[in-house]
Length: 108
Length: 113
Image 1 (tube, each protein chain N blue to C red):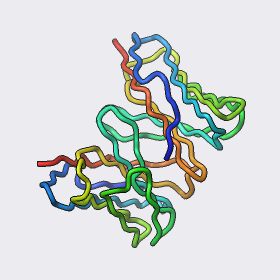
Image 2 (cartoon, rainbow over the protein chains, first blue to last red; image 1 turned 135 degrees about the horizontal axis):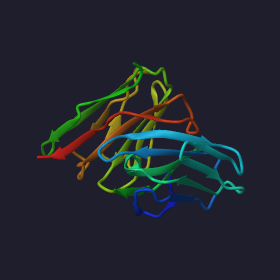
Image 3 (cartoon, each protein chain N blue to C red; image 1 turned 60 degrees about the vertical axis):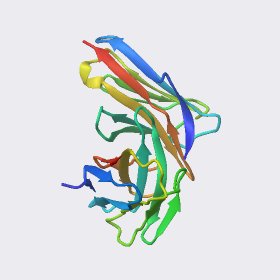
């Protein structure tokens, strides 16, 4: 699997603030999956986007897939302490592409 | 309950020793994957298998070997040729194809004695 650039690498926010992580690729992606990994835990699948410009919401989480299908974002509104963990993207077709992950810390 | 079971949770290896990490799934998934995760780092693909009796090398296959004799099982052997095996190893499965969501096991932490 190749790497997809993911930024930021780390993010510290005060509880209640918003958070966004971005995945950027130099090549067109067929799809994008987002996962969350709690400290000491295993990755858990959150969502998959496949269409250009697609936007999906899960409660306080909003996921977007760019029009050119080269970038994606995950936005959390009003973070809570339960949001702590590392969020990473994954894209797969013939090959697997991984985001390097963004580690989110929420300060109570 | 359907899921992926990795064992053991913790494993210690002596220098020059081969060790095998177990991964079993009862999700009836065709594809299975092995990843390595180093502290503070992202996932790196070691091996994957999309059907029984077939597997492909990932980015960091050197020093590792796998087998896929049964659909449910995808054991990973860390050989003595892997000079820096200390890491968190994650197994995953999916219905098939890289575009399917992956379900992960709880992982095995391997350390060198």
